[in-house]
Structures are given as C-alpha cells and as structure tokens.
Image 1 (cartoon, rainbow, N blue to C red):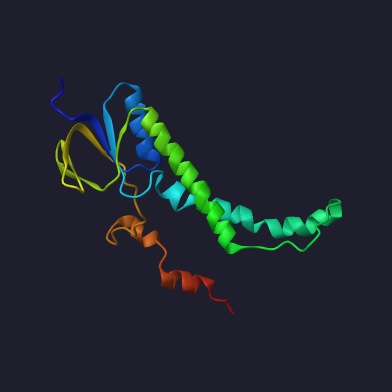
Image 2 (tube, rainbow, N blue to C red):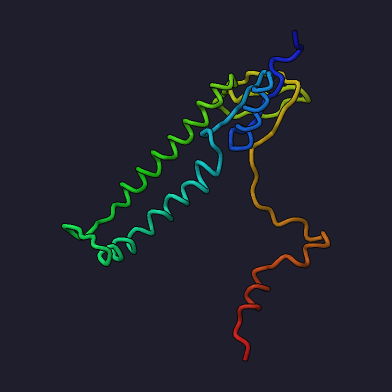
Length: 172
C-alpha cells in the first residue's frame, strides 16, 4: 500500500495534462487531475480550435460566388447568422471537451472539477479544501507570453513599440 492517495496528480487538463494523465494511468499509475474550467485547455476551448472554425466559416462567401461557374445555383442569396455560427462553434467545443473527459474516465483517471494548488512537496489542495497526497505532482496549467528580463543579453534583440514604429516609417 502506498503512503500517497495517488501516484500522480496533474494540475490542469489541457492537451498536455490530459495526455500525461492518460499515459501514466495506462502504465498502472493511480492518477488524478484537477481542472477549474473546462477539460481541453486553451487550444481546444479558447484558441486553436475556435479560431480554425471561425476562419473556416469565413471562407464560404467566396465559395458561394465561385460555385456558379461550376453549375451550382441557389434559390435565394445565401444569408449569414452570427448567432448560428457561434452556437455551432460552441457545440463543437463542447463535443471535443467531452471526448477529452471520456478518454480520462476510460483511462481510470479521477477528475476534480475545481482549482488545485500545490500545498507541499507531495500535497495538493483543492478549492473545496480537500488535500490529496501524491508521489508526484505535475503542474500542466499552461502559460502565457512574457517579455522577459530587460537585463538579459537577448533583450537588445526584442522589438519594442518604438523600434517597430521607427522601422515602419517611410524613408525619404
């Protein structure tokens, strides 16, 4: 019997966290994951997938125009509904998030639908106050862009608003 509640606790159920949890579980580890929002992470929920769906939808008007040259006709002028597009996008995102969740469940991963923080070397505290011990903790909460330390040698190559503005000015 292990001295820990789980072998691996993953904080964050984006693509990386889900993959790590599923692989570890597949090797027999007792795994738990916590996600405070929706399973799937930034790419599936807010980034790559929604962007691709919206870009794909934006390409249809040209296709409608071009189709007449290939024998297609429409009884009426095609119309567009922003509300219908957003509803379809949201439905697809919910479907993909559900697949991620189903795959975690099939792998035997315990899912905690709440925020989690590292409480110690081998402990995680959930938003509801529950503390779970883990032999290993993986923080897979994603990240955001940073500018970096201006004292770093590479910072002199980092463009600034002023340098971009100056480089874009017309030369006489």
